[in-house]
Amino acid sequence: MTDVFANLWLGLGVSLMPMNLLYCFLGTLIGTLIGVLPGIGPVATVALLLPITFYLPPVGALIMLAGIFYGAQYGGSTTAILVKLPGESSSVMTCLDGNAMARQGRAGVALATAALASLFAGVVATLAIAVAGPPLAGVALAFGPAEYVALMVVGLIGAVILAHGSVVKAIAMILIGLLLSMVGTDVNSGQMRFTFDIPQLYDGIDFVPLAMGLFGLAEIILNLEETEGRGVSPAPISRLWPDLKDFREAWPAAVRGTALGTVLGILPGGGATLSAFAAYALEKKVARDPGRFGHGAIQGVAGPEAANNAGAQASFIPMLSLGIPSNAVMALMIGAMMIHGITPGPQIMTKQPDLFWGMVASMFVGNVMLVVLNLPLIGLWVRLLRVPYAYLFPAILVFCCIGTYSLKNDVFDVMMMAGFGVFGYVLRKLDCEPAPLLLGFVLGPLLEENLGRAMLLSQGDLTVFATRPISAGLLTVAAILLALILLPAFRRQREVAFKE
Image (tube, rainbow, N blue to C red):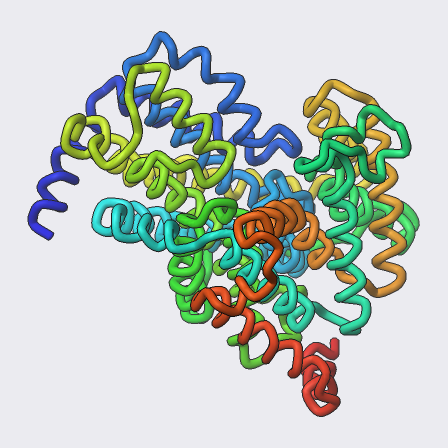
């Protein structure tokens, strides 16, 4: 432990150098702005800014790219809370209770909770990288294709149990999400699936048009219908900061979200989005009154926000320790390191300690910068709610269209977003929750890819899922959850718990 603190002290010396502080500030600022603006995303931004890093020193380049990544995870919560528009896929779960709090006049409390939970998670995840990077990366190595399949099956069945409303509707939403994720080119055979000979669908459906439509446009249509164009007037703003009761309710959720995000962040394909979904499901499970979720439960903001920030930063563990990227942004980070002649892996800690520990310590600095940047702006963000809805909803529509169009500079994406907006409106009318659909959509490609790998490695032997201890244990949990769903007594109890 003494060595860890000595190394962190070395890293702080590197990260607090004036130029590195500037790069960290620029990264967190750009990341926050990207998170607020829907549709752009950290992957596209890191890819666009990668050429700039050719002219920066290696440490400064990596510090700036890292700041963009975890800054975007925080920034996405602002529009999610204020106008129910997720700037990032990891902010989808924050929409559900954050926007409900805003309508109750507690937008400032929700934004402050998101900022403080993100800060706590960022500090803890940074310590996890420093203390337990290589051992935790070994956990990721124990997960093969069979284990990933079992883990995702548990996640999908858990989503059915924890979704509002009918079990049948929740299963239908997950199946629709899985079907939508299969649109495009089959990675194994190269065949086109469900594309209807439309070239724009050859690469599949992007997350942004789907999320913008289901959450942003559907919400606008419902508001205009229910209020005859006046919009929903939020309650008068009572305060901008959480009180003691809010802290008591939020901090256990932030701790659980941080722990879950740190563990899931090191798994390939896990990262911020899966962490946020899992944290929200966990909070529903442990809550005394699950019916509060979706109606302004502060745990529904603190848990996912802590989890997505912890997941974003924990994904650096396998990248730095083993050179294994856990998501697309980490793959770009490895590319940036290789451009500078740096090979990620265990040797980086001994051969280039300044770079490794400087980058780790910069995450402490970056998370503090994020809070310093955003907490003073809470009052300004909250004032947006006072803008008349007749002026606000056209602006939301414009941002949705610009963000979606910027993906590929293709009008087809904007049309697809409009179609999903109508689809989301129909789902809301049928009392179907869209969150399980998004979970199925996110996990679909990973489930298909790992199922194909597991079958290939086992030569088509399905018993591989039962003979490997971790996958067998996870599938046992899935079977227990499935049995609970089928029990009439449990279904009645569930309906009572989620009755509004």
